Length: 428
Image (cartoon, rainbow, N blue to C red):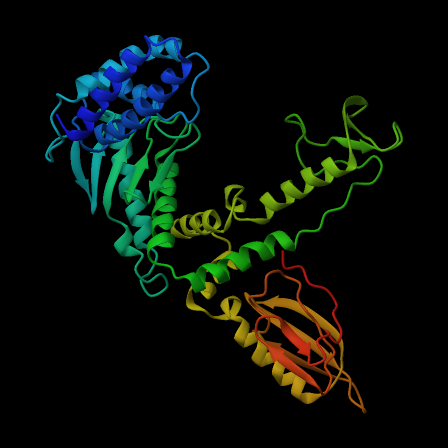
Protein backbone atom coordinates (compact mmCIF):
# COMPACT_ATOMS: atom_id res chain seq x y z
CA UNK A 1 0.00 0.00 0.00
CA UNK A 2 1.11 3.57 -0.64
CA UNK A 3 0.22 6.85 1.02
CA UNK A 4 -2.02 7.75 -1.93
CA UNK A 5 -3.83 4.42 -1.85
CA UNK A 6 -4.29 4.80 1.93
CA UNK A 7 -5.66 8.32 1.46
CA UNK A 8 -8.05 7.01 -1.21
CA UNK A 9 -9.24 4.19 1.05
CA UNK A 10 -9.87 6.67 3.90
CA UNK A 11 -11.81 8.98 1.56
CA UNK A 12 -13.88 6.05 0.25
CA UNK A 13 -14.80 4.85 3.74
CA UNK A 14 -15.66 8.39 4.80
CA UNK A 15 -17.80 8.78 1.67
CA UNK A 16 -19.81 5.65 2.47
CA UNK A 17 -20.31 6.89 6.03
CA UNK A 18 -21.45 10.36 4.94
CA UNK A 19 -23.96 8.91 2.47
CA UNK A 20 -25.98 7.82 5.52
CA UNK A 21 -26.45 11.47 6.45
CA UNK A 22 -29.79 13.04 5.44
CA UNK A 23 -28.00 16.30 4.54
CA UNK A 24 -27.00 16.70 0.91
CA UNK A 25 -24.19 19.06 1.86
CA UNK A 26 -22.49 16.19 3.71
CA UNK A 27 -22.77 14.09 0.55
CA UNK A 28 -21.19 16.89 -1.46
CA UNK A 29 -18.20 17.40 0.81
CA UNK A 30 -17.55 13.65 0.98
CA UNK A 31 -17.89 13.39 -2.81
CA UNK A 32 -15.36 16.21 -3.34
CA UNK A 33 -12.82 14.51 -1.09
CA UNK A 34 -13.34 11.11 -2.71
CA UNK A 35 -12.92 12.52 -6.22
CA UNK A 36 -9.74 14.39 -5.28
CA UNK A 37 -8.15 11.34 -3.62
CA UNK A 38 -9.44 9.00 -6.33
CA UNK A 39 -7.91 11.17 -9.04
CA UNK A 40 -4.55 11.21 -7.28
CA UNK A 41 -4.50 7.47 -6.69
CA UNK A 42 -5.82 6.70 -10.18
CA UNK A 43 -3.00 8.71 -11.76
CA UNK A 44 -0.51 6.88 -9.54
CA UNK A 45 -1.90 3.52 -10.67
CA UNK A 46 -1.52 4.54 -14.31
CA UNK A 47 1.98 5.87 -13.74
CA UNK A 48 3.54 3.18 -11.54
CA UNK A 49 1.48 0.02 -11.01
CA UNK A 50 1.70 -3.21 -13.02
CA UNK A 51 -1.94 -3.43 -14.08
CA UNK A 52 -3.12 -6.96 -14.92
CA UNK A 53 -4.15 -6.97 -18.61
CA UNK A 54 -7.66 -8.18 -17.78
CA UNK A 55 -8.08 -5.30 -15.34
CA UNK A 56 -6.74 -2.57 -17.64
CA UNK A 57 -10.09 -1.53 -19.12
CA UNK A 58 -11.68 -1.44 -15.67
CA UNK A 59 -8.90 0.81 -14.34
CA UNK A 60 -9.38 3.10 -17.33
CA UNK A 61 -13.11 3.37 -16.55
CA UNK A 62 -12.41 3.99 -12.85
CA UNK A 63 -9.92 6.77 -13.61
CA UNK A 64 -12.48 8.42 -15.90
CA UNK A 65 -15.05 8.41 -13.09
CA UNK A 66 -12.76 10.59 -11.00
CA UNK A 67 -11.92 12.96 -13.85
CA UNK A 68 -15.34 14.60 -13.72
CA UNK A 69 -15.38 18.24 -12.63
CA UNK A 70 -18.99 18.73 -11.53
CA UNK A 71 -20.84 16.75 -8.85
CA UNK A 72 -23.70 14.52 -10.02
CA UNK A 73 -27.23 15.62 -9.20
CA UNK A 74 -27.89 12.42 -7.26
CA UNK A 75 -24.69 11.48 -5.42
CA UNK A 76 -26.04 8.27 -3.78
CA UNK A 77 -27.16 6.95 -7.19
CA UNK A 78 -23.75 7.85 -8.65
CA UNK A 79 -22.10 5.93 -5.82
CA UNK A 80 -24.19 2.80 -6.47
CA UNK A 81 -23.52 2.94 -10.21
CA UNK A 82 -19.75 3.19 -9.76
CA UNK A 83 -19.04 1.11 -6.66
CA UNK A 84 -17.36 -1.68 -8.65
CA UNK A 85 -14.93 0.87 -10.04
CA UNK A 86 -14.23 2.24 -6.57
CA UNK A 87 -13.51 -1.31 -5.40
CA UNK A 88 -11.14 -1.95 -8.32
CA UNK A 89 -8.95 1.00 -7.34
CA UNK A 90 -8.92 -0.30 -3.78
CA UNK A 91 -7.76 -3.65 -5.15
CA UNK A 92 -4.99 -1.92 -7.11
CA UNK A 93 -3.31 -1.03 -3.81
CA UNK A 94 -2.18 -4.67 -3.56
CA UNK A 95 -0.74 -4.87 -7.08
CA UNK A 96 3.07 -4.63 -7.52
CA UNK A 97 4.84 -1.73 -9.15
CA UNK A 98 6.01 -1.98 -12.75
CA UNK A 99 9.52 -3.24 -13.35
CA UNK A 100 11.50 -2.97 -16.55
CA UNK A 101 12.11 -6.08 -18.61
CA UNK A 102 8.72 -7.25 -19.82
CA UNK A 103 5.80 -5.87 -21.81
CA UNK A 104 4.73 -3.67 -18.89
CA UNK A 105 7.79 -1.43 -18.92
CA UNK A 106 10.42 -1.25 -21.65
CA UNK A 107 12.66 1.11 -23.60
CA UNK A 108 12.04 2.40 -27.11
CA UNK A 109 14.96 4.62 -28.02
CA UNK A 110 15.32 7.09 -25.15
CA UNK A 111 11.70 6.69 -24.10
CA UNK A 112 10.77 4.65 -21.03
CA UNK A 113 7.49 3.15 -22.24
CA UNK A 114 4.76 2.17 -19.76
CA UNK A 115 2.22 -0.26 -21.18
CA UNK A 116 -0.71 0.51 -18.87
CA UNK A 117 -3.36 -1.07 -21.12
CA UNK A 118 -1.84 -4.52 -21.44
CA UNK A 119 -1.30 -4.12 -25.19
CA UNK A 120 0.21 -7.20 -26.82
CA UNK A 121 0.87 -8.78 -30.20
CA UNK A 122 -0.02 -6.58 -33.18
CA UNK A 123 -1.38 -3.78 -31.00
CA UNK A 124 1.86 -3.49 -29.07
CA UNK A 125 3.95 -3.77 -32.23
CA UNK A 126 1.91 -0.94 -33.79
CA UNK A 127 2.49 1.32 -30.79
CA UNK A 128 6.22 0.56 -30.72
CA UNK A 129 6.42 1.18 -34.48
CA UNK A 130 4.76 4.56 -34.01
CA UNK A 131 7.23 5.53 -31.28
CA UNK A 132 10.18 4.51 -33.45
CA UNK A 133 8.78 6.44 -36.39
CA UNK A 134 8.29 9.52 -34.18
CA UNK A 135 11.90 9.28 -33.02
CA UNK A 136 13.12 9.14 -36.64
CA UNK A 137 10.95 12.12 -37.54
CA UNK A 138 12.18 14.10 -34.54
CA UNK A 139 15.81 13.33 -35.41
CA UNK A 140 15.26 14.82 -38.86
CA UNK A 141 15.02 18.25 -37.20
CA UNK A 142 18.60 19.45 -37.03
CA UNK A 143 20.12 20.69 -33.78
CA UNK A 144 21.39 23.81 -35.54
CA UNK A 145 17.87 24.82 -36.57
CA UNK A 146 16.16 23.67 -33.36
CA UNK A 147 18.70 23.88 -30.50
CA UNK A 148 17.85 21.53 -27.65
CA UNK A 149 15.05 19.73 -29.45
CA UNK A 150 16.78 16.34 -29.46
CA UNK A 151 17.00 16.43 -25.65
CA UNK A 152 13.18 16.50 -25.60
CA UNK A 153 12.92 13.07 -27.29
CA UNK A 154 13.17 11.15 -24.04
CA UNK A 155 11.45 10.47 -20.73
CA UNK A 156 8.34 8.60 -19.64
CA UNK A 157 5.82 7.69 -22.34
CA UNK A 158 2.56 6.02 -21.30
CA UNK A 159 0.36 3.84 -23.48
CA UNK A 160 -3.09 4.53 -22.05
CA UNK A 161 -6.79 4.16 -22.71
CA UNK A 162 -9.41 6.86 -22.71
CA UNK A 163 -8.40 8.62 -19.49
CA UNK A 164 -8.34 12.14 -20.96
CA UNK A 165 -10.69 13.81 -23.37
CA UNK A 166 -12.40 11.49 -25.79
CA UNK A 167 -10.93 13.26 -28.82
CA UNK A 168 -7.33 13.13 -27.59
CA UNK A 169 -4.95 10.71 -29.30
CA UNK A 170 -1.97 11.92 -27.27
CA UNK A 171 -1.12 14.65 -24.77
CA UNK A 172 1.74 16.11 -22.77
CA UNK A 173 1.46 16.73 -19.01
CA UNK A 174 3.94 19.48 -18.07
CA UNK A 175 3.58 18.88 -14.31
CA UNK A 176 4.88 15.33 -14.74
CA UNK A 177 6.92 16.04 -17.88
CA UNK A 178 5.33 12.91 -19.37
CA UNK A 179 3.71 12.07 -22.69
CA UNK A 180 0.58 9.92 -23.00
CA UNK A 181 -0.44 8.02 -26.14
CA UNK A 182 -3.75 6.27 -26.86
CA UNK A 183 -2.84 3.57 -29.40
CA UNK A 184 -6.30 1.99 -29.41
CA UNK A 185 -8.16 4.98 -30.90
CA UNK A 186 -10.27 3.69 -33.76
CA UNK A 187 -8.82 4.59 -37.16
CA UNK A 188 -5.53 5.86 -35.71
CA UNK A 189 -2.74 4.63 -37.96
CA UNK A 190 0.86 4.09 -36.95
CA UNK A 191 1.83 7.14 -39.01
CA UNK A 192 -0.80 9.31 -37.31
CA UNK A 193 0.32 8.14 -33.87
CA UNK A 194 3.90 9.09 -34.73
CA UNK A 195 2.78 12.56 -35.80
CA UNK A 196 0.82 12.96 -32.56
CA UNK A 197 3.94 12.08 -30.58
CA UNK A 198 6.13 14.63 -32.36
CA UNK A 199 3.36 17.20 -31.78
CA UNK A 200 3.52 16.48 -28.02
CA UNK A 201 7.32 16.58 -28.02
CA UNK A 202 6.98 20.01 -29.64
CA UNK A 203 4.79 21.11 -26.71
CA UNK A 204 7.56 20.01 -24.33
CA UNK A 205 10.09 21.95 -26.42
CA UNK A 206 7.85 25.06 -26.41
CA UNK A 207 7.45 24.98 -22.63
CA UNK A 208 10.97 23.96 -21.61
CA UNK A 209 13.37 25.38 -24.20
CA UNK A 210 11.91 28.30 -26.14
CA UNK A 211 12.32 31.77 -24.69
CA UNK A 212 9.69 34.47 -24.28
CA UNK A 213 11.15 36.48 -27.14
CA UNK A 214 10.57 33.69 -29.66
CA UNK A 215 7.08 33.05 -28.31
CA UNK A 216 6.19 36.72 -28.81
CA UNK A 217 7.48 36.62 -32.38
CA UNK A 218 5.63 33.39 -33.12
CA UNK A 219 2.42 34.75 -31.57
CA UNK A 220 2.64 37.82 -33.80
CA UNK A 221 3.16 35.58 -36.81
CA UNK A 222 0.21 33.39 -35.76
CA UNK A 223 -2.02 36.43 -35.30
CA UNK A 224 -0.86 37.96 -38.57
CA UNK A 225 -2.38 35.01 -40.44
CA UNK A 226 -5.72 35.50 -38.70
CA UNK A 227 -5.64 39.28 -39.11
CA UNK A 228 -4.90 38.95 -42.80
CA UNK A 229 -8.15 37.13 -43.50
CA UNK A 230 -10.81 39.18 -45.25
CA UNK A 231 -14.21 37.67 -46.00
CA UNK A 232 -17.39 39.05 -47.52
CA UNK A 233 -20.84 37.63 -48.04
CA UNK A 234 -21.47 35.72 -51.27
CA UNK A 235 -23.67 37.41 -53.84
CA UNK A 236 -27.24 36.34 -54.52
CA UNK A 237 -27.28 32.74 -55.75
CA UNK A 238 -23.59 32.10 -55.07
CA UNK A 239 -22.39 29.08 -53.10
CA UNK A 240 -20.85 29.31 -49.65
CA UNK A 241 -17.22 28.06 -49.65
CA UNK A 242 -17.73 25.31 -47.06
CA UNK A 243 -19.95 22.37 -46.25
CA UNK A 244 -23.38 22.85 -44.68
CA UNK A 245 -24.92 19.75 -43.11
CA UNK A 246 -22.14 17.72 -44.73
CA UNK A 247 -22.88 19.02 -48.25
CA UNK A 248 -20.98 21.40 -50.50
CA UNK A 249 -22.40 23.95 -52.88
CA UNK A 250 -25.17 25.46 -50.74
CA UNK A 251 -26.33 28.73 -52.30
CA UNK A 252 -27.40 31.92 -50.54
CA UNK A 253 -30.59 33.88 -51.21
CA UNK A 254 -31.33 37.27 -49.69
CA UNK A 255 -34.75 38.11 -51.12
CA UNK A 256 -36.87 35.57 -49.27
CA UNK A 257 -37.01 37.43 -45.95
CA UNK A 258 -35.58 40.85 -44.95
CA UNK A 259 -32.51 40.56 -42.73
CA UNK A 260 -32.28 36.81 -43.25
CA UNK A 261 -30.39 34.53 -45.62
CA UNK A 262 -31.95 31.40 -47.06
CA UNK A 263 -29.58 28.50 -47.78
CA UNK A 264 -30.59 26.15 -50.60
CA UNK A 265 -29.35 22.81 -51.85
CA UNK A 266 -30.28 23.25 -55.49
CA UNK A 267 -33.94 24.24 -55.37
CA UNK A 268 -34.47 22.70 -51.93
CA UNK A 269 -34.51 25.15 -48.98
CA UNK A 270 -32.23 23.94 -46.17
CA UNK A 271 -32.56 26.64 -43.53
CA UNK A 272 -32.34 30.31 -42.61
CA UNK A 273 -29.48 32.23 -41.04
CA UNK A 274 -28.49 35.87 -40.63
CA UNK A 275 -25.63 37.84 -42.20
CA UNK A 276 -23.51 38.05 -39.01
CA UNK A 277 -23.72 34.31 -38.41
CA UNK A 278 -22.81 33.53 -42.02
CA UNK A 279 -19.86 35.94 -41.88
CA UNK A 280 -18.65 34.20 -38.71
CA UNK A 281 -18.96 30.78 -40.39
CA UNK A 282 -17.04 32.03 -43.39
CA UNK A 283 -14.33 33.60 -41.25
CA UNK A 284 -13.95 30.47 -39.11
CA UNK A 285 -13.65 28.37 -42.27
CA UNK A 286 -11.15 30.80 -43.81
CA UNK A 287 -9.06 30.79 -40.62
CA UNK A 288 -8.82 27.01 -40.52
CA UNK A 289 -7.86 26.94 -44.20
CA UNK A 290 -5.18 29.61 -43.71
CA UNK A 291 -3.19 27.57 -41.17
CA UNK A 292 -1.19 24.39 -41.85
CA UNK A 293 -3.97 22.31 -40.25
CA UNK A 294 -7.37 23.08 -38.75
CA UNK A 295 -6.00 22.43 -35.27
CA UNK A 296 -3.12 24.86 -35.84
CA UNK A 297 -5.64 27.72 -35.87
CA UNK A 298 -6.46 27.06 -32.18
CA UNK A 299 -3.67 29.17 -30.66
CA UNK A 300 0.03 29.99 -31.19
CA UNK A 301 1.34 27.02 -29.20
CA UNK A 302 -0.81 24.48 -31.04
CA UNK A 303 0.20 26.12 -34.32
CA UNK A 304 3.87 25.69 -33.41
CA UNK A 305 3.41 22.05 -32.39
CA UNK A 306 1.53 21.27 -35.60
CA UNK A 307 4.12 23.07 -37.73
CA UNK A 308 7.01 21.19 -36.12
CA UNK A 309 5.23 17.84 -36.52
CA UNK A 310 4.53 18.55 -40.20
CA UNK A 311 8.13 19.64 -40.74
CA UNK A 312 9.46 16.44 -39.12
CA UNK A 313 7.55 14.39 -41.68
CA UNK A 314 8.31 16.64 -44.65
CA UNK A 315 4.79 18.04 -45.01
CA UNK A 316 5.13 21.70 -43.97
CA UNK A 317 4.77 24.01 -46.97
CA UNK A 318 7.63 26.28 -48.02
CA UNK A 319 6.22 29.48 -46.52
CA UNK A 320 5.53 27.77 -43.20
CA UNK A 321 9.00 26.25 -43.07
CA UNK A 322 10.70 29.56 -43.88
CA UNK A 323 8.64 31.35 -41.25
CA UNK A 324 9.39 28.67 -38.63
CA UNK A 325 13.12 28.66 -39.30
CA UNK A 326 13.29 32.43 -39.63
CA UNK A 327 11.50 33.07 -36.37
CA UNK A 328 13.61 30.56 -34.45
CA UNK A 329 16.79 32.09 -35.79
CA UNK A 330 15.54 35.62 -35.28
CA UNK A 331 15.99 36.42 -38.99
CA UNK A 332 13.71 37.70 -41.76
CA UNK A 333 10.17 37.21 -40.47
CA UNK A 334 11.56 37.08 -36.96
CA UNK A 335 13.20 40.50 -36.90
CA UNK A 336 12.32 42.49 -33.81
CA UNK A 337 10.64 45.86 -33.49
CA UNK A 338 14.05 47.47 -33.09
CA UNK A 339 14.88 46.38 -36.63
CA UNK A 340 11.69 47.95 -37.94
CA UNK A 341 12.54 51.13 -36.07
CA UNK A 342 16.02 51.27 -37.58
CA UNK A 343 14.57 50.91 -41.06
CA UNK A 344 11.97 53.54 -40.30
CA UNK A 345 14.73 55.85 -39.12
CA UNK A 346 16.50 55.48 -42.46
CA UNK A 347 13.66 56.88 -44.48
CA UNK A 348 12.58 59.31 -41.75
CA UNK A 349 16.00 60.90 -41.91
CA UNK A 350 15.63 61.34 -45.66
CA UNK A 351 12.72 63.77 -45.03
CA UNK A 352 10.86 62.65 -48.11
CA UNK A 353 7.06 62.23 -47.83
CA UNK A 354 5.91 58.67 -48.49
CA UNK A 355 3.28 58.69 -51.21
CA UNK A 356 2.77 54.95 -51.64
CA UNK A 357 3.61 51.73 -49.83
CA UNK A 358 3.67 48.13 -50.99
CA UNK A 359 4.10 45.07 -48.74
CA UNK A 360 5.17 41.79 -50.36
CA UNK A 361 6.96 38.54 -49.61
CA UNK A 362 9.90 37.38 -51.69
CA UNK A 363 11.41 33.94 -51.04
CA UNK A 364 9.87 33.88 -47.59
CA UNK A 365 11.26 37.29 -46.58
CA UNK A 366 9.15 40.43 -46.11
CA UNK A 367 9.80 43.41 -48.34
CA UNK A 368 8.42 46.89 -47.70
CA UNK A 369 8.58 49.07 -50.79
CA UNK A 370 8.13 52.83 -50.26
CA UNK A 371 7.42 55.31 -53.02
CA UNK A 372 9.10 58.55 -51.99
CA UNK A 373 8.45 61.94 -53.56
CA UNK A 374 11.27 64.43 -53.91
CA UNK A 375 11.20 67.96 -55.21
CA UNK A 376 12.35 66.42 -58.43
CA UNK A 377 11.39 63.05 -59.99
CA UNK A 378 9.79 60.32 -57.89
CA UNK A 379 12.02 57.47 -56.84
CA UNK A 380 11.37 53.98 -55.46
CA UNK A 381 13.41 52.41 -52.74
CA UNK A 382 13.07 48.91 -51.30
CA UNK A 383 13.94 48.13 -47.72
CA UNK A 384 14.31 44.42 -47.00
CA UNK A 385 13.39 42.91 -43.66
CA UNK A 386 11.32 45.88 -42.48
CA UNK A 387 8.29 45.69 -40.23
CA UNK A 388 8.54 41.97 -39.95
CA UNK A 389 7.13 41.36 -36.49
CA UNK A 390 4.28 43.76 -36.05
CA UNK A 391 1.07 42.23 -34.83
CA UNK A 392 -0.56 41.77 -38.19
CA UNK A 393 0.13 41.70 -41.92
CA UNK A 394 -0.97 45.35 -42.08
CA UNK A 395 0.95 47.98 -40.18
CA UNK A 396 1.47 51.65 -39.48
CA UNK A 397 2.43 53.93 -42.37
CA UNK A 398 3.54 57.53 -41.82
CA UNK A 399 4.41 60.60 -43.75
CA UNK A 400 7.21 61.95 -41.63
CA UNK A 401 7.96 65.52 -40.66
CA UNK A 402 11.09 67.23 -39.40
CA UNK A 403 10.03 67.11 -35.74
CA UNK A 404 9.35 63.37 -35.74
CA UNK A 405 10.93 60.75 -33.52
CA UNK A 406 11.17 56.96 -33.43
CA UNK A 407 9.54 54.90 -30.69
CA UNK A 408 10.32 51.17 -30.86
CA UNK A 409 7.01 50.13 -29.30
CA UNK A 410 4.51 52.46 -30.92
CA UNK A 411 6.27 53.15 -34.19
CA UNK A 412 6.82 56.56 -35.71
CA UNK A 413 5.31 59.39 -33.64
CA UNK A 414 5.55 63.16 -33.87
CA UNK A 415 6.83 65.09 -30.89
CA UNK A 416 3.48 66.87 -30.85
CA UNK A 417 1.96 63.54 -29.83
CA UNK A 418 0.00 62.95 -33.02
CA UNK A 419 0.63 60.37 -35.72
CA UNK A 420 1.50 62.33 -38.82
CA UNK A 421 -0.26 60.14 -41.33
CA UNK A 422 -1.87 56.87 -40.19
CA UNK A 423 -3.07 54.57 -42.92
CA UNK A 424 -4.26 51.54 -40.96
CA UNK A 425 -3.28 49.09 -38.30
CA UNK A 426 -4.76 45.76 -37.33
CA UNK A 427 -2.94 44.71 -34.22
CA UNK A 428 -5.61 42.71 -32.47
